[in-house]
Amino acid sequence: MKKFGILFLLFIGLVFLSSCATNGVSTNVQSGNQNVNAVASYHGPKARIAVANFRCEAAKCYEGIGSGMKDMLVDSLFKSNRFIVLERGETFNAVQKELDREKGKYFNKKQGPKGGHLERADILVTGAIVAFEPKAGGVGGGVGGIIGGIFGVGASTKNAYIAATIRLIDVATGRIINSTRVEGKASSFSVGGLGGGFIGHVPLGGAFRAYKNTPMEKAVMVMLDNAVKSISQLVPEHYYRYK
Image (cartoon, rainbow, N blue to C red; front, side):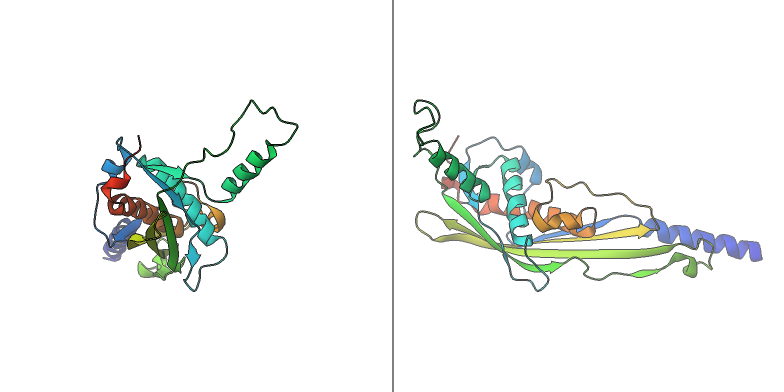
């Protein structure tokens, strides 16, 4: 009878572990849905777009998060193949300095760019991080305690949540074309040292590097996917005019 009880508890423990071992990722975008495969396989006309640094409006958002989000969104928009993405950050300042430097007397005037040929953006993406919760709560406990100390290992669930508001601005007129809110949520269950890392679609930028292989990395990648799909959908069709 005692043996039967132990086997029963062992079965309950295995059921518990199998039900929790799956990583949970959820998404939310308020502007509607779009097939991600349609975005990735796009080969039509493109829109010219630039991205500004994101502001930090969430209580736990700190320096480096906004610029990191901007860099990752730039990479994500470029990979979508729907946009001509124009640099407007530190790299753009470096380009300007190089153009000015090449005007000097030590450079061959017949070689290189003559200036005045930089492309103009039609749309500027601005945004603000309005929620940033690397540890949004979860469930922790010892599995061994649940099944009578048979396994004796600890298990915990960690959750992360991030949200941002995004505005699309017509550069020529300053008008707001559209705005939306995108979110990313993720949870990760781990038992002892077991578990795998998460490979994102783009490298983590700025202060986000501190969250590599954590639920926050998953949440960020989910939100970036939502942002690209949302922006692709919200940009009016007549902006897609460049081949």
